[in-house]
Image 1 (cartoon, rainbow, N blue to C red):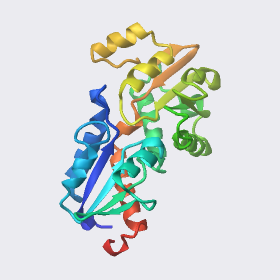
Image 2: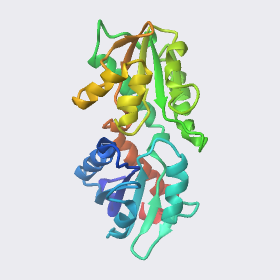
Image 3: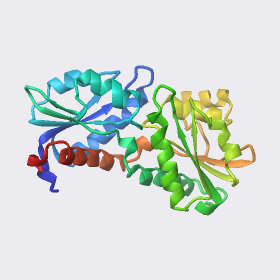
Image 4: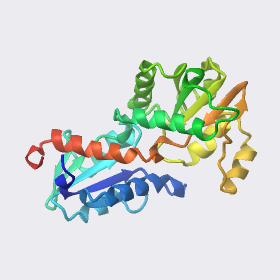
Length: 282
């Protein structure tokens, strides 16, 4: 597929957005900027569900015959799979023909198989960057994928549990487990789950927001007062590695900020173009 294939299309990178944390929007702008730099699409736009620029006005401004909306979400959960496509008027096949353009609503990035590589890269990089006293081998590490989880939609945890299965099958790490903020097993359970002294926690979140910078470090045992002081000073809220509960714990940045995610977004567009009635354009 050549780089000009999407010259007649607009890419819309869609985030949840929030008015409570400025950093939550950063990955949307980060990956949109990278894909804009590659000059693959006729246009690249940022959009959000809960903050400006909001997705509905953005879609009305599209000037190309096609547009691909890629949800920068971890799972096919409550918002990505139910609320947003319904409110935007998409049918079950996630195609919407408007008087301006043909819109394609792609699958969430977090459920793509390429995310396995993103998680492994995050885990590897944080240990290599902070090799104190020396970088342990993966066979001596328990990898923990930390997710949000919600009881509103069972699919919310599916993408994380699937990644656990995929990584376990590679037999790289001593053990691989999933823990959650709002479901069992909870974040603090990682210490009991880990059979090794070395523990690498990778947050399966889109942005380095309050959950990843504040909630999870506190649940891992960092004093709330220290976390808030570091946050206010613009410092990392977790020092790698930190010893907690007789474990040496490395804590990586969120998966959604990894540069490899731009390729995941692009692959979601390719899939949607091939499989949803757009074959004449390929």
